[in-house]
Length: 274
Length: 166
Image (cartoon, each protein chain N blue to C red):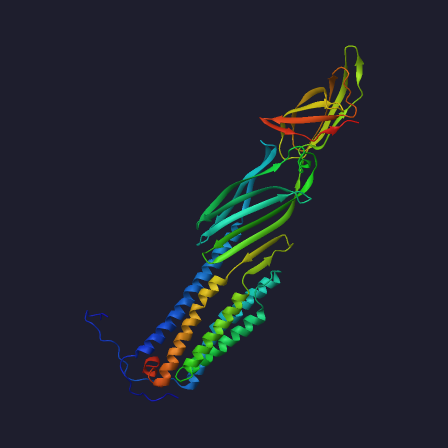
């Protein structure tokens, strides 16, 4: 049923035009935001599909009694919108929760259709006498906590936290210095000194391992060094005769070892001599 | 406005109005329900169910989406059918208010916290700013509804020739 055609005024009144404008604006806002949301979802899916990658991580001894673990972190942004205020922080602790080191990336912006490559490096202290010297001689699990923040497509803040354990291969796993029974007479007394360990680190140890045999009073009884070229995963076990200083007994003393490679010096935990 | 012959056309001046019958308006409103149902209820619930089936925690319950969507559909349909009447303004306000409540509920669920299977990683995504922008639409709708209500109160048939030109 249709109503009869009635006469009316020719121009819409102002209040009508205003209401109509607001309705159109309302519709426009919805349409624009729906299109925006659709493109954001598509772009975010593309970013997730490209997935962040950690590449080329290598470990090596570094100055100041540290092991450097370095590499790069890559994040592709194939979408339509920038990744703003992107930052990433990672914190490494040992099994007992002692802080070892951290790394930071950003804050930075990854433009649309681009890839951000961020070199990262973390330095783990392996100084003898520190709470973390066991990193040198004991395989263990380390705690890795990482968290990242970013704002995607101007409006969507994101944060990611990650917590996991990673195995740590000690470069001098099971390091022992064994001092044998002194032998010899008037021409000098020598002791056989055996050094053994396994290189469970991911890098080859090339350098010199020097040691000093100290008496219980701290006097140096004798010293020598070994040339090292120990591949990852390899057992090292060598014995050298060491001349002792006259009247110096290593019994009850200790063996102090130092690893030197390319200008880097690492002091290993002292080994007690029975 | 230019005509094909290069002259200037006079503004279109309606010569009357013709209100569609109630049955016709119900029919059109029912047809409009189809895309609205897909957009407001079917699609969101399908996405939420898909995420849930993959073990992904969902930020908003399917029940809330269904209830909110049905409320918006019912009010939107009533608004369309009631367009020639004085109820149009108040129904526009009610529909927009329902949308505001729905959006505010969704904002209260932000940020979305997703714990990945295994529990070693957590992703937190905020979307409240986007929904706050989305609030502009129903707020404009409320303003339009208020203006229409005022206009209808002053002159009940004043807008009909422009809403339903013959």
